[in-house]
Image (cartoon, rainbow, N blue to C red; front, side, top):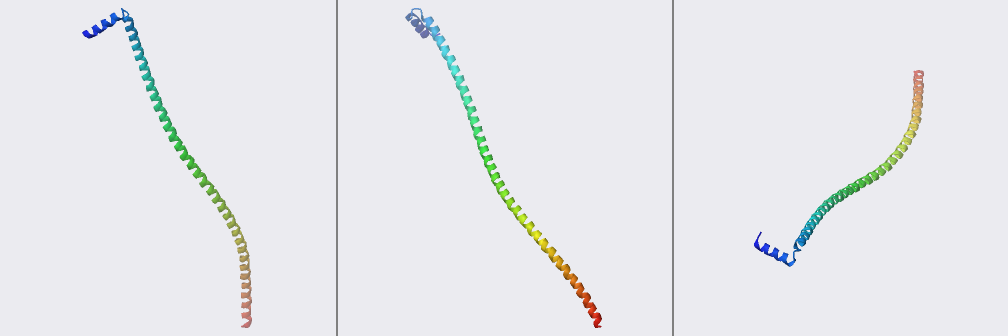
Length: 140
């Protein structure tokens, strides 16, 4: 070791009247304790940073999921509104269908009546033809 260190060490020893060894041991123990505590603090800080990063990741994931949830909720609301509009449209179409069916039945009834009249007229025409042919035969 260098001479200056030995000189300082011997001065320190003489100033403490031989108790310097005890003080050096305490100083070493204290230094070692401080080093260990500092190491533990660094480990704790590293774990805290790691946990903090995990929390940030979870927060980001939660925010992303909340955004997805909101989008899906909006999509569901849109579908529900469309569904209600379609239900209303279907009701209108059913009502129109019912009305058209009634009109068709009315027209079928009128058609049957007209068909009967046509048959009557055809029958009358046949009768008139027969009478006309008889008349022609009597005229000749």
